[in-house]
Amino acid sequence: MNSLLPPASAAHHMLALDWNEPDQFLSSLQNHLAQTEPPDLVIAWIHDDELAIRSAASFPATNPTCRFFHVIGSATLDPSSTAASFRQRLSRSNIAYRQVILGYIVENGAARWLTDEEISCGVLDA
Image 1 (cartoon, rainbow, N blue to C red):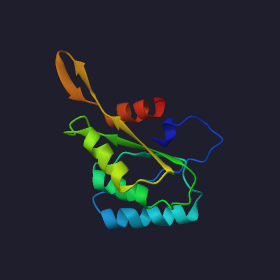
Image 2 (cartoon, rainbow, N blue to C red):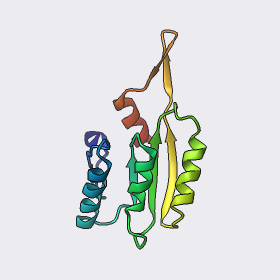
Image 3 (cartoon, rainbow, N blue to C red):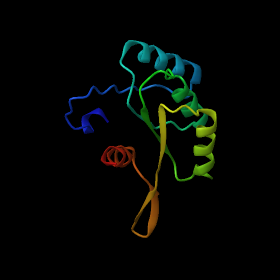
């Protein structure tokens, strides 16, 4: 995904962490945050809504405002309940929560899920 990013004056920190190990994931994230500047934009493509909330909660409350884009699948039963849970549990003014709800493509009369590359390009274009 890093190769898809346009050249910019801002620092990009790409983290590839295993969300199947939530405690290790959060520990690695917190270690990274301690060594870098606070993020102003996070794209969280995490399949576990609870872990996405815990990830955002790991940002210090004193950080500047961070735009937190949570990428979720269109198979999620009720994306609005995920958003409501996020806002209720993390009601800090320095986290601006947004959802990116993935879709699908119809090809040759059949629907298919988006590929990882299509998702990455779509998120970056947005």
